[in-house]
Length: 436
Image (cartoon, rainbow, N blue to C red; front, side, top):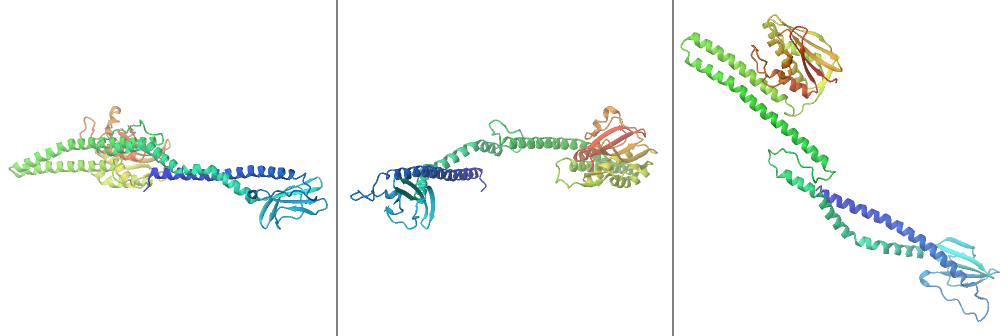
């Protein structure tokens, strides 16, 4: 289990153990240094206390044995080098004195030795370093044992405090878990720790995106239902006229109207499905690849050459720069170009002209479609990108979704859609893409 509380507990306890270990080593070293200084002082004072002893004279009281716990070894020589006194034998110690403090390495370990000449004697006091290390270790342990004994209490306190610190997150999780599926209000930031606020803000942004997406989908469904109601009602009326026709001529005319209505309804449904697929967030995101805009333009021109020929439209390319490429979904970009060309052909009168071009301007790569049709008044150019909107006075049948599809695909590719008057006399629609 990936428990944050358990992770924090073990991490903090591990850090405390490490700190205690470092503190123990430092305490041991400090205690050792202090004991070294104290013991060196004791060695000197002990040697000075023997300066008035006359060991070579008869009837002299023998020296008292040193404290066994200190493990001191005393040697005294006269001025001729004859050893007058040895507290207890230690063959590992040097037989000659070296004046002052020295540390001697022997087969029994290191010894601290102090030698001093006093009157006609040389006195040497020796002590094994192991005694000092043992005393330093005992001092360090006496300092650390209370802290080690408090470790369980520290663990319990850390467990409680970490749990108390995580309560705001638990309340947040409970609030999210108890929400209804349609509740997309922002989560409150009050009482949330600073470290968790970026997560809550990110969740709020996601909830806002979901709210907008659901709002867009509801509007789309409402608009689609409204737009489908009329053609479906017309189809029902045309079907009834076919059923009531009493002669072949009337029946043929009614069937023609029914066929035309079915074609329009099928085109509307196809446009609705295309728009739904191109909405941001719909379906799995397709990988972005390098797309040459001139290739997209050529393929789309080929798709609509037959339709343009039937309607008497001069469809061609003005300038197609093969060096201009963007990152995108080739199928979606082909749908975009196809809708632009289809719209231009539909609204251009017979004998008119439609030109497609791909060039560079203002740091963007532009796919432009110009026509010689009636154009769109400047005050309505922004609105024609909305769904189901058609300018007043339009005679050509349509769904009002073609440019909405173009705008949706352009937004998915970080492109801009610009509508202006065309040099051909009609409308110019340009889509500016960022370079690949």
